[in-house]
Image (tube, rainbow, N blue to C red):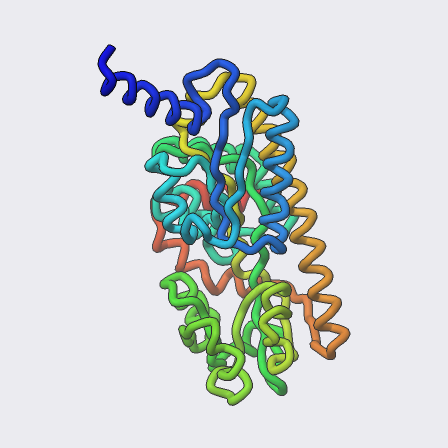
Length: 325
């Protein structure tokens, strides 16, 4: 054996050890990308997922969680998981819909009538079918997680208690076609702007309102200048952990089952954390004087129906979701 061949052999062995493959007793190390900071409930849940994987595989598989977008934002993470550069990522279904269109049905406005309906869909046959479709993009999708439910909030003197109250109001939205069309159909004036500009725009009256979940409504300080919050739940796209399919398929069946079991338990844990954080934020803003109104969003759902027509390929899934009691 030449010295060059020997050196190549050493390098190959080192790579095999680093990737956790090639030696029967070597620890398999999986890298997971998370764009949220350590304190966020989803990141806490990802560390729980890592602990469970280690427990259920008797230490044979280790998941390293890279939080705070160390491995890139969600769009980049999805691309890297597809390419096999990283193994796992926790992402929102909004950017994921760009590579696996079926999941986009969960990002449509008012597709869910509430949390109970949402998880009947996500944990049932529809959710399983959408997750199975991810294989075409080279991905394995695990159980869905909570990423918050967005509702409208407005400045002093502009409360919303019914659909007509939105008429003519300038509402800050994310710069996405669905969000813009949604507000238009609801009678408002969609006003895209950077998130960092929303507080001052509300404070000065440049906009009349915005939309987000209770956690963001609180942490952004928007509740200080927009003391009217109406729970309509117009957008509630879930999050999910995805894994490179080839990497998942390369693992022994018992490890695949262990990872899937850990992901399911971590998803349920994450939902509990997110709902608790949402409830805590709601209590905090109400104690600060915010008026929180819960409404029947039926008229809102009816008003945005033309959006569904923009996605004919999702028509069957839309009907199946609406048929879930």
